[in-house]
Image (cartoon, rainbow, N blue to C red; front, side, top):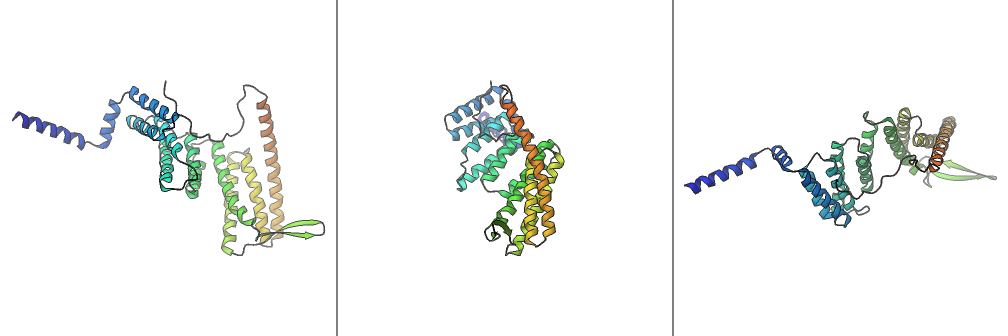
Length: 304
């Protein structure tokens, strides 16, 4: 009887544990996980990472996240390890799954730290590397439209979108079938011709229109955005090409004039940036001026 009673108690305890809500079990596991346990997992993550054993590093990073889901450091380590395991240019399903896992990990990091620049830029890099252009465009637009982000960073995002719309048009208007060189005397003039596909022509017109809208939104947020003014210059040039294709000479002249005006502003901002960079290079303790490219995932360091 005693054995039967003990068995019933064990079964009841087991049933109670498995019958708990998952969030309750997670809360209990967090309560039992000490900072020392989390730090140990992070240290082991870093050691495995340095040794090039990324699968082991991932296991330890995942363990650290499970022990402390609110830890920004643990979330960062896991995202970096997954990013490191992804191999750009390899389009196998296993490798693309790793890229998606890294994106998910960086997105989770941003739920803990909404202003995390590394996570934002890494997700953009991964979307681009895996050819998810629509997702990339949506991701950048989310930042551009987010009022919680600084105006300068929002302007940068709008400028990136303007550049993508410019590329949409430029790749078509510069095709040999749409651009020829006419020789008159000693002069060589470029002549732009409408694409044979009417739908394609309408598509690039929409790209230019959307691109100019993005550039203007960027400039409204940051009058000194060199990239926004530069893309506005080039998009107005694309508009001039489209006007020529349509036989609208007055419109072409107007767009060329506006493009030249935007170029003046672009050149002025570029000169100011170069002067700041030169001044900064002469100051031993000066910080670098201007945006820096995102470095590859750094080797995680254990907490002290």
